[in-house]
Image (cartoon, rainbow, N blue to C red; front, side):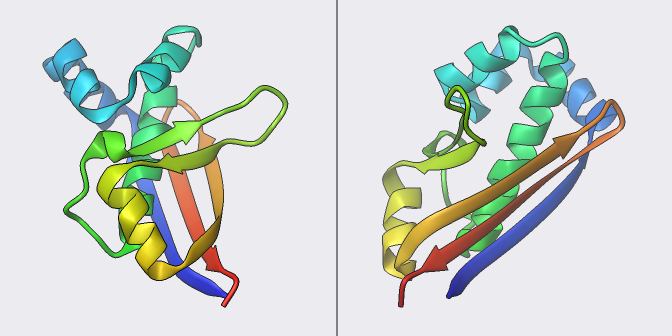
Length: 124
């Protein structure tokens, strides 16, 4: 049973302008160390960060909670598998309250825009 769904579309140039303005200080506030490291290894690192930010916004909507810290929602990518979310702290507690047993995450991006979509499911 679906207990939460969220989707976010983000313009990459707009995110890039904010990223240039806030720099590493902003990145450290929004992204975990592993998310920043992943983006640093990519040729299109800003796109990778933008789509991860879109996923975090979508996850907040799916969880029904805007009061979460950005780093409590982490996009993780294990070699050979699709990206998924790791929830920490208050985000993990919100997921437990909803009875979340599975998370589906879809990411897509190009130089102009990116989309993150999150579907939360429960066994109930």
